[in-house]
Amino acid sequence: MDTYNNELLYCNGRFKPYMRGKIHFLGIFILPLFYLQSINFINVLTLIIFEAQFIISSLYHIINHKYKNEILLQYLDHISIFWSIFGGSTYLLYNSGYYIPIIINLFVNIYINTIYNVWNLRLIGSYGLLNFILLFNYYKINYGIILNLILHSSTILTIYSEYPLKKNKFFGYHEISHICILLAFCQLTMINI
Image 1 (cartoon, rainbow, N blue to C red):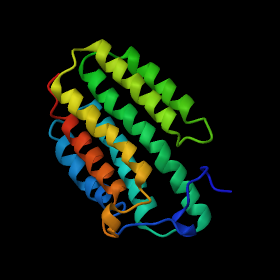
Image 2 (spheres, rainbow, N blue to C red):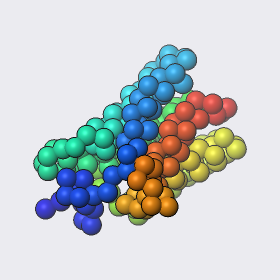
Image 3 (cartoon, rainbow, N blue to C red):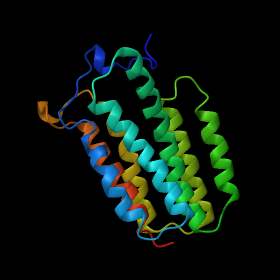
Image 4 (cartoon, rainbow, N blue to C red):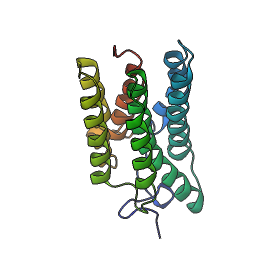
């Protein structure tokens, strides 16, 4: 039995464009250039959370695994998406001086990840909405934050990840989502709050 309903594993024939996972692999080396310009606790913590997602994603998508190993990496990959949402909002809230919402957000993240079928668009949408509400209530929304939310929302493109763009075996919708997420993580450091 697969970990997630209706999601085919690569070892069972899931389509994989050539660039699948390679953008996140590149991101492993790009992110430190942004987050280590100013070394402090929240920058390092955020970098660790984002790096963990990109490392897990790279291992999951690039390398061919045996059945049990792929299920484990698939599970970790999906959990890391929730943690990256948490990392982004934590970065902004911490830099604004609001710490209690971070604790609430942490417990919500832990609760979500106790649910068996973590990869659920309604859960992702709800969790993303929670973070938007937190950001909206705790400081004035600016164009930088709006752009970041748009980039993060690109995750919806992974719905079409089984289909290559114009039957292109090199690059698919999933890869566009990975580019947007990498841009979102980098752009966080440039938001003036």
